[in-house]
Amino acid sequence: MLTPESSRPRGVKAPTMRRYGGDWQPLLERFDDAVAAVTLPDTAWAVLSCPIDGMDLDPDFVAQIDRDADGRVRADDVRAAIEWTAARLHNLAPVTSGSDELNLANLKESAQAQADTGRALAEKLGKGPDAPLTLADLHNTEALCQCGDRDGDGVVPVHCIEGPLAAAATDILSVCEPGIDRHGKPGVTLKVLDAFVTERDAWLTWREQPGPHDPWGDQTASLSDDLLDCDNAVRVWFLAAELRRVDPEASLSGAAEFAPTAGALRDAAALTEAIDALPLAPLADKIEGEEVRLSFASLRPGSLRPALMRIQAHLFAGDDAITLEQWDTTAQTAERVRDWHAQGEALGAGALGRARLEELDDSTLASLRELCLLDAENQAALGHLLELEQLLVYQRDLFAFTKNFIALTDLINPERRALFERRTLILGGREFHFAMRVRDQKAHKSLAEQSGILSCMSRFLTATRLMGKSRRKWWRYR
Image (cartoon, rainbow, N blue to C red; front, top):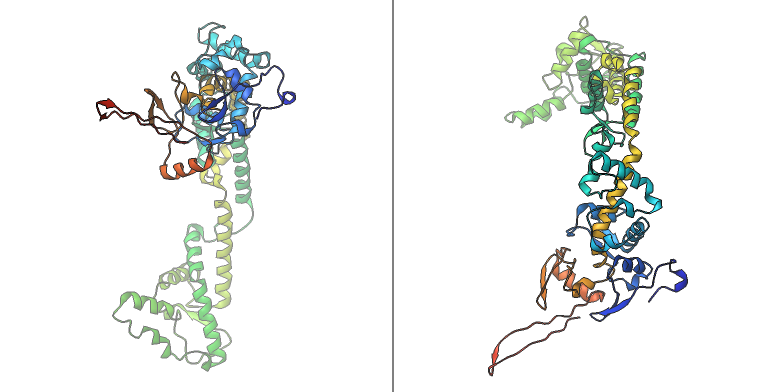
């Protein structure tokens, strides 16, 4: 079960094994024992993985030990946390005791850059360079950086920007996805500014390209919609009319065209639908001439008639009837207008308008870039503080967690808590608080019986009067 001596790191003693509840488990009395247990194979560990949901521990600790953020802590996560902590501390006693204060003098040479940043923070807080730091101290990044929310993450919130640049940042963030700083506040970043420049230049280029911008003035948008809405019905009418002109027998007679309205005269909705199903205008029994024309005066009542009358008023005011060629030319213009506007709408920066985009020139953006770069100057210091925060969280909680993951020694230790299921259990007069929530107790019981990982020895005492004496009952569950 134990790791061979040749594969054990130098200076790490072999873990001491004890038999608890019928299973061999490593004895974890100090954090040094947990460091030694890292070398054990998975078969010697009591737990190989557990969900973080419902864990009765600080969320900061849970988030940090779950390296891949998949909602589960696995044996390799615990090994990495133990090795990472042991590699940075000279004396592991604070980890054993779960101290919530970090002594910077206890950091090894490999963590001296972090220690120096911590001493600088302690001096800014007026605590002295050798004073221990708490989590509240490490969260006070503003004291070290002395620049408000500019804490080295490269995100500059709008409220940290003054003057016209604040308005510029607000407009940019209204059309671009903002960056989020470590305090959860949105702001501008170099990436945001680059994305805005790309969209701004693309929109201005699109606006200057030759094309059907507004061929019909302020009515262009509405007339284009009307033309495209009516286009299919108009083309169907011309096709039917052309067939009637070539072969009068190729389509229904004029009387038969009204057949769909039969039975719908008392139903307004059905009547409207039936009328819309008819050709836009009646087809003559015989169409003579070389060109078929659609007469606006002959349009039947229907949902498309108002749109066609608007089209005639604005685009064919001098014509009582139009040919397919006239309609086709106008409809193609509407299609080009639609496609051209769709290109601009796909560029979100266009929502600011041409005048504002031209005001947000390269010099304005260069000033915002300087603010982002100034913020990023604190990135190294912020990274050091984040590592010190992780180290302090591990120092406080890691050993307690390992004693309920590598081994279950707390279950039989009257001086320590156990961290399993969130319930209260009293054994031999001792009270234990479990930290893992079991949502489906029946399924959990079945799984526990099959796994053979956990074993528990319980003694139930029942005091009853039997022949004037107390009787004790014992049960053993494994």
